[in-house]
Length: 407
Image (cartoon, rainbow, N blue to C red; front, side, top):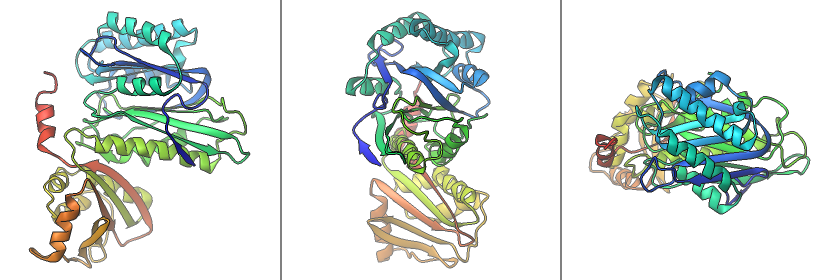
């Protein structure tokens, strides 16, 4: 696998645009991604029962092929009743008519403030403009990624290339947004995190199960603030423009897809609202991989762990309490807990603390917790299961941002 400097249009056959339609005052706020041919698709949706209108529209059809995806930011079109449904459907219909494609092959998503109606005159004008500006290359890659941002502080795009078993070179690329209201648990058959991944690889079969596995090892194990959004959606489009063999069972291809999506998920975690540090948790020695992921996610979801990391406080009790609340099996007499970032220190082992107040180890632990990236390594001592999760610290800035979000 080769990491490349690219974005959503790096795979063959894809174009994109990001425009300013006026939902936001002075920022790009509408993105459109288009494939010049039919793409096999898999879409994962939020499990929040207060679903936004675009999610309701998408879940009703649950498209298995897509040609385009339209996304607005600044307004979530959530909790907007029948009008919201009509507006989301209108966005699909307009794109379909202008591009001469089936509206059911047009994905739609929204992100932003909940409970406000979309200014459809502005959205419609923005869609018309975006269709005229569809293109490939660095500018549309950047503009489309900017257009889906809300409180994000940076764009999130990644791309890579890999050779299939027959030598065919394929490209995988993705863009995402996410900063607050982040605790995804998306399901394909069933943001807000919002992500779109494109590839020019050919797939012959429905990729839903593969995409679910990717979700469970990426977006579904990040946590910023414990709140699952009304608008979470993650879509995958494979248009086959690279030709060659089908990649359905090609391990290298799916490793590349997972790399792109994990990179996007980590970028969302570190860009959490008010975040100053990335927390990475690796759990080993669990009964199975699912229990390991559950334990890791419980730790990154804990506000007490997040606050301790923000304050560089090596309070191992916070971490072990979060483990105890995870539902995962463990043997406390065999649990080992370490912190690392270049340096490493063991906080707890064999059922007892190894860190003493005022000791050299405590000083090392505090210095690790002052870094921008903190690795928590936890062995549960009951099996061979392994899992990861990523989150961020909880700072004063998070409260400031969300205390005045709608104003």
